[in-house]
Image (cartoon, rainbow, N blue to C red; front, side):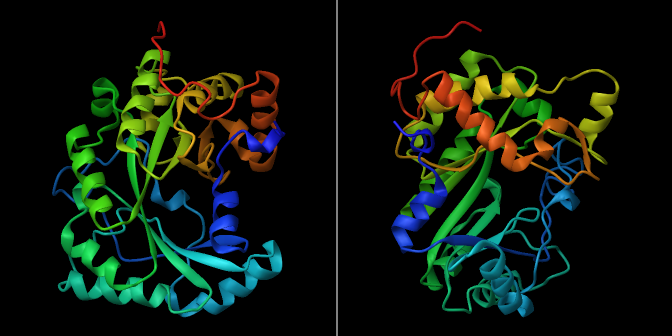
Amino acid sequence: MQKFDRLNRIGDHWKKKYGAKTYKLIFRGEFTCPNIDGSLSNKGCIYCNMRSLEPLIDSKNIEGHIKYLEDRNNAELFIAFFQDFSSTYPVHSIENKHDYLKKLYTSSIDNDKVVGISISTRPDCINTEVLDILAELQKDVIIELGLQTTCEKDIKWINRGYANDQFIESVEMIRSYGFNTVVHIILGLPNETDRTILENVKFINALKIHGIKFHQLMVLKNTELENIFNKGEVNVLDIQEYFRRVSLFLAHLDKNIIIHRLYGDAPKKDLIEPLWCLNKTGIQDKLFDYLEEHNIWQGMHPRPTTHNP
């Protein structure tokens, strides 16, 4: 088995599907979140700092950003990507939210080189009105949802704000439209064990979702997690332990699920810990070396077995 054939990676998937190198165009919108605007909570998830996201563009600068990615990365086709806050949940000052979303999403794909759209949001911000708008675009649609964990103690600890059953209902609603779902997972939460990792895998495999993004627990500035970390009440994973845990997850993950991300990163100005995630390309090489050294590949154990904590 070749080193980079051990995982079902998104770049390979898009190249096979579209016949060209495909990149994301990251857009902005006037969005917020029910977990911070007072509808559900005003605290937000404890790790959230939306200012640490990659630079965003607006629909007026599509051509320039496409040209930049073509020159820099040899990109040929593109996915319009909305990732700030809950990108189906406009701020309250926007009165006609339906028209706002329709105009925003439509303008983001107004280029023949844009083959799809990806929306990052929450299960409690998904409804048929939003999905109907996306269906009208007649492009490939991906909905990213932050599961993070199925462990009830950690769900409460991160202040996620919705139940696992609501997550399942949202995935089923998205599937009914023929759209793909990508799930976000955080490794390194305080109550995590090998057993809870395998429970997360089992949950995701059963949902038959399309893709997954992995993140390590990261401490960012201006978050509640920063305060908790500074009190010494939580630790972050070192790189070798992160490799071990993500490898355990991958070994039991359905081989048909597409890997969109293997670890998280953040700008140096916003990151407190772990500092090892600053070296983006170096981490990927080291992780694949780890998989090769331990002879691990995605889906090698199709049914999670019982693991001691």
